[in-house]
Image (spheres, rainbow, N blue to C red):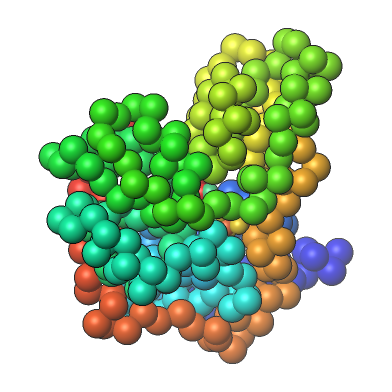
Length: 304
Ligand code: 13P
Ligand code: SF4
């Protein structure tokens, strides 16, 4: 009952503020339920760039709200929990990247969107888990620097002839899923397909029947004639998978697949952000302009 009231309050405030609520696929169920749009990093960036709303309430983590601010500088971007960060994004700094660029002069930098605006600004092009292979193969160079996710970079390496210099970052949540977790579940459920995110450790990815972004999972599982899936990504994905495919069974591949940052945002936080119009995420122009260049180069690559 209380939840219904707060959801109604949020809906009213969204209208009053001419705001749109974007939620990442890993958000709590109740936050996904009230979102105007749920999606993966690529999908939400595209929505942020094209919305007519004056306010974007970004239910996700800090780098995602920064991307919205970079792409839609005339909008007010609210991140209901300013402390919702991403440990992988924090594993690389602008200085660290500049040092790596000095080691490989002239080699272009491909940066996963799970990174700060300052790191994007020092990069040539961004990518997401949905388009990383396409982005890397769109470059004419025979060598690239790939940051910050070594696991996504290793995965991309399977689909390109280019030499990839990896930054040694990783997602602690995906890294917690072990080969043993997957092997045990595969033995228990031989009729299931194992689908995983490329942020997983390469030894886990090697066991997958299909590797894709979070939104790619909705697409794959709904189109597949298979009825049972072992899911190798953050637990928030299960909400829509189950809702949209009531005739299918979804099993989380490890109980450790919970990102604490993605679980911070509550309905109360969303309501309070709309009431107070805080916290605002705003990327300063001197960082925004070069970061936008890297994002725009990525967005210019056609989606499948
Ligand atoms: P995607 O939604 O782009 O697959 O990204 C996963 C992720 O870890 C976001 O933090
Ligand atoms: Fe960062 Fe991993 Fe959490 Fe995504 S799931 S926000 S990559 S720590």
